[in-house]
Length: 80
Image 1: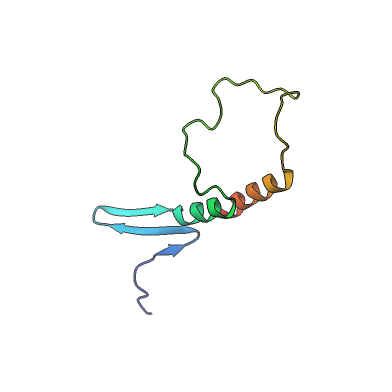
Image 2: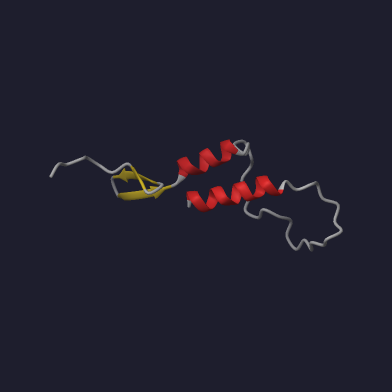
């Protein structure tokens, strides 16, 4: 048996060793996802929508790219 050293990346997780413990993160995957879909410079928010917004079918909305949406959701399913 051979010592391969400290674990750094496995199963989609990055392992960061600190003096007080071990941190698991998916930061690299999240950054890659944001870059791929042109969202790298987006601003984080606590609430992704207007609070108490009532959605209706006849609202004036921009056209939705269903293929892009499905691709993004599929990528999330495979990544996490």
